[in-house]
Image 1 (cartoon, rainbow, N blue to C red):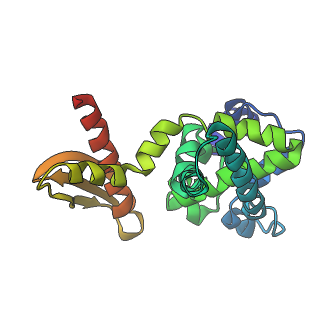
Image 2 (cartoon, one colour):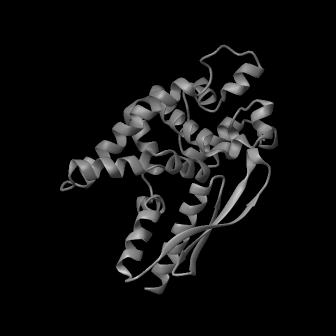
Image 3 (cartoon, one colour):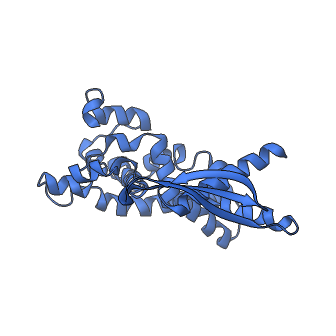
Length: 234
């Protein structure tokens, strides 16, 4: 995929994220999967894992400070829950997809052929590594600015997505005698790369349909689509 981009792919990514690295090696490491390191016999440590570790801590600090400042009356337990939804793997994967991070990854051939650029766990980890890389390159303020423009942007819709099953269950409970259930309606592809399609039904009526690499992800997408449809009807 990198060969298909214009010259200087790292520069292309810098334009997308609105940040230019002083030390480009940090950016390269943040995008390098261990399979690429092993395949090319690069020194261990020049992949995203150590940066991911750092980025996770930096991201938690930035999101904690954001919640503390923006929600002055929110209690500790609610802030903890909200922070968890902001920095969970699924939320970070959405942020990574929004900037097309998967296009720029350095992957080994095996990971490439099994769809590594689209795997949520990989691109979410790289998103954390990117935060860590920016932190090392320019410090907390630069990392905070990046997180604010990506991870903390459009929180309302991200929270709606990740709390969708809970919110839909609460809606169903308000409907007397309601019966909410999730039904697997399709599954395609080989075992290592299967795509599931789930429908969420209320009293037998389909409210939403969604797909994903796991049944859980597909059900979450179905619940989100159902909530969007219900909002339109209100």
